[in-house]
Image 1 (tube, rainbow, N blue to C red):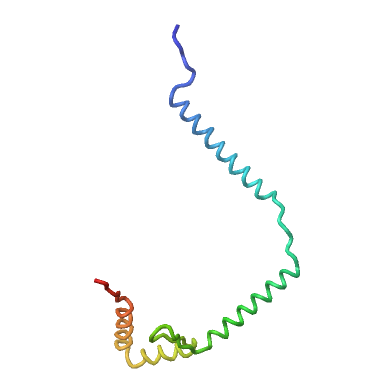
Image 2: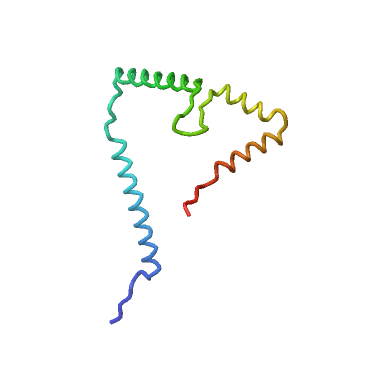
Length: 119
């Protein structure tokens, strides 16, 4: 007696891919359903006001720091300028000629790329 299959190897492979694909969609759908049905806690109005006040304070402190001049005592040749002063310095360097400003910029770039050798 010979065994005859109704389905060949190619049909089984296609069926396996189909079942795997449907299974994948079902798993992703179930995970999405679990995420959607989770209860989201309501935002407390007092906490929201507190967070907003903290954010405003951080923004005000940042704006105050942008306008200050400071020299870092730990690092040589490092100073923090205000944004306005930094723009004035850049305009001053680039206004006599673009070639001079470009040369200074490239010189600073090369100096920053130098690495110390311990050989």
